[in-house]
Image (cartoon, one colour):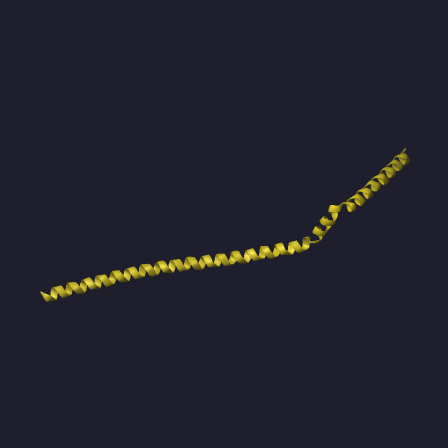
Amino acid sequence: MLREKLAELLTEQEQLLGRIGAQRTNMKQLPQMVDIVSTMDRVPEYQKKLQWIKNSMQRTQTMVDQLKKQSLSMQAQVQKDVVKAAEKKKAERRQDEQMKAKVVVSSK
């Protein structure tokens, strides 16, 4: 009984191997397989290009971040300069008014 079962399994295994071999042969004969194989052969090339694009995008993002920092710093400096110029004008006007007041007082 055990020998019969083993023989049956061996026969079944041989049939399966035969079917797998036939499927492989059929797959190789498909016209699309040539395209698939050529595309799959180029996968490493595509991976390298993708990595290059990814690295390039990271470098670009780093540069953008640096430029944003510089821009914010320059905006802050411009605002400080505007405030400083306004204060200077205000101080000059005050000084002019004081000078005018002295001239008016001394002419009386």
